[in-house]
Image (cartoon, rainbow, N blue to C red):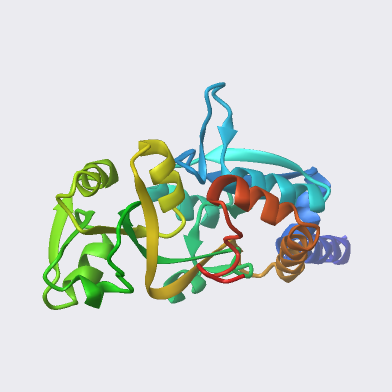
Length: 261
């Protein structure tokens, strides 16, 4: 009797270890759904449309990935402040929300290959005749940036640029259109959306600084899941669906650096 009890205990322990070691790919395949976290308040990447439905670039990319994995997408909205903690505790399987794969985050999560590449970019008036090829060309000129943004720090590092900070993009874009600024600075992915939304006579200018990528994080210890995600990402690029979605929101393929053909 004691031997049977010990054997049963051993089998149960072995099963528990096997279950805990199961790759996330097996879990999502058995469930039939892919749980995807987005903020839902970050246009044009993810937001609620006029029908109250989740929409945006990241939403469509996530839907395309789920289709390639033969899974049903299940979206879960989360504030940015808690989104990584939610992934860590298993509330969702992945985050598709322009997450930078920093060294610190890589201590806790694994990431897919980058799926968007962006850099800081100047914004100028549509009729601008001067050639601003970078921040150095703005010495003695006025540059608008968002208050507390990384772009403010980037601009202040260049001596001679008069940096003016604003509560948000609408305010400095308005001043730029009115001629109160010579240029503004924001993320290259956001500029087409901002110009379209404000309907101001502005355009994107030169890229500034280094190129950074955003990727899709998931819990460590799931190599099959990660390989399947990377394959799905490669597949939607190969079949043209990634480019189609990208052009819809950004007028270019954002898997490539700004200016690349």
